[in-house]
Length: 216
Image 1: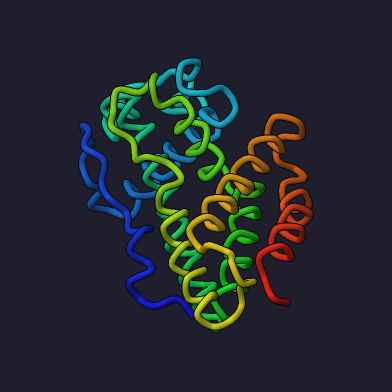
Image 2: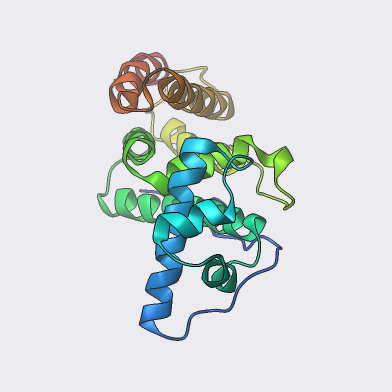
């Protein structure tokens, strides 16, 4: 299983931007989540530039003023979606860690779980698109791929120590290759099939990669 400090790459780091008030009541929190989810749906489908605050307000059947109360700018809303995208990964890591697999199997299950999230979770989908559109967003978004690479490299170092990697396989190079292959696979699946086949396509790719680096 991963050591506790391996969760650190996925800790949620608040992005510096204007923010709306923190909801003090359950109803306000539900409304804020509703707005964020609607925005994620629109960002995923249309992108940042082609989504307006009015579009979001219309989708949730609220006034623009009500949406602006929770999210003062479109950048604020985009940042909230990206932060929630990144918040998904510590939850996935905790779930996979609790299963108690060896380090190489943990890597495989993490990436399989991420593939399912890219297929099923609109916030994950929207966050990925917003990261691609970073130059259009007036906020300092996290650098993508770095946390995934760091986490997988740590797990693969443990896999090497446990004799689970083939002799001569570099954990760092293997981590970089896995991250490149995974995010390339999900992007191609998005472009060609709106990620409906991302789990299957990643399973094909993963079988080849893990056979090439693992001893089993």
